[in-house]
Length: 333
Image (tube, rainbow, N blue to C red; front, side):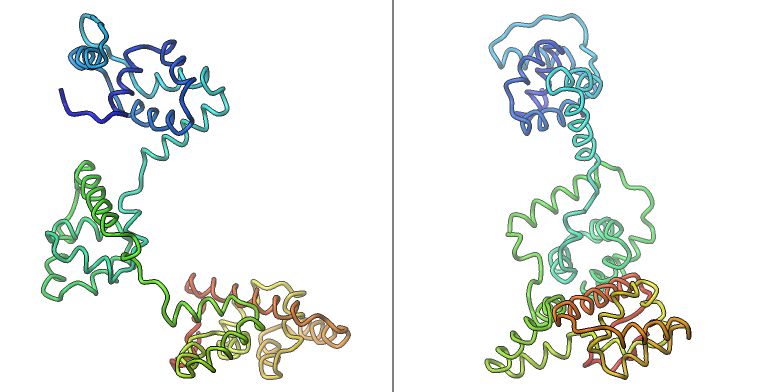
């Protein structure tokens, strides 16, 4: 008999016992236990007599049946669960099982820093590395490739170029082994956490008062570090450096009320940048709204500015505009 895990044996026994008896057993299990068994049952195409005898003997029972017991695990489960969990919960459970069975290959390693992943897999066979790369997406694959030793880069790419079909079992095996090995050395070592860039990103999403307080404290403690963080931060006034087409793209995504509030404390240079990329009618309305606007809370103005910055960052991720660090000297597009 093939070596089976405990859940696999239990799932096979339930199939052998039939829906009625299995239903009584499942009533005494937790939701997680039912889910675990259900995943195993759904993947069993049939239970052979030889396996039946050995399993029942192992559980100190007697069961004799001529021929094979051909029971489709998935259909068995669909018939069984409604009587145990109720129709609605049974449907949810089947959906969960289906999603778990359709695991996305190499999803785990996609979250790992490219440099760390490259260092981890560089000793693998080039064919294995090629299989991993083609499942990472083009951008992440290129980043990992760039961190591999130069002597290995061409060999891996050559394998990718000649890679056509790969057996699903092999893909699953490589994925499971890689994930297991990475987990065994501690997840904290897989990702590059923190750093000046991380600080800048966190402060970018903080309100102005919090950000300035932290930067001032950082300035007192380590002026060089504070300066590095400031160079990487992108604040509302930096929008003036985006060119006209980028500003127009941004304005499409911003509500007039929020724009008016955000411009309350903006510099004349930034206001003129915005006005330049609006219609004459829109400019007149905006200027009128700004002129009649009474006192407003600074926190509300900063919140509106932060929301617009969040839109700008999203557009950058979508490739519609680019937000460069102020230290780079690059033009914004």
